[in-house]
Length: 227
Image (cartoon, rainbow, N blue to C red; front, side, top):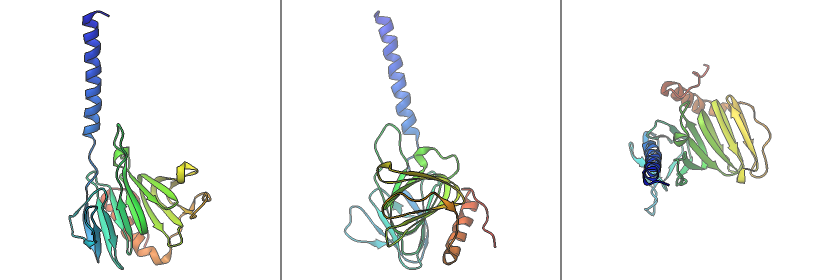
């Protein structure tokens, strides 16, 4: 191969690699997220500290950190791209380390107990979406408002109020897509039945209404809840 041709090919490869790196680095970094609303008692456990400490408004929540609420507590965590994770009373999440790869993946959290509502803007790129690992399932929120409840008996309830989410089992043994308004009950072991129509527990009406109002006001989608 002539030297001038070889040089041209090499230059093209360098430009291609540079463009790929530039594209990846241009993606917004989703962590740390920020605690933007705080009601009642909530606590944070940092990955490099031995104990839980009181949560404070505007605190950063980063990889390896955990966040929990006490009875009556309610908090909202927002990523730099604007996605929201809202934790209900007596609930706990942990922020997981992101997977390495050529393209940044979604924000990954683990729901250890209680209620978590995730709101992701419609049309959000994969790098700004949210993935929730909760016992027997992984819930990928691509552009939706979804409530996820992990029960003490190991079951999982996923309620899609608007938009769509994908739920997968361990090692992707099963997969279910929910399009709002639908819900899915995942047993502690085994595959779940198909999704069914959404049915809100009367005891959770206030929680659902508050989140639905937040979604409409924040531009996440959905509709104002009926009186």
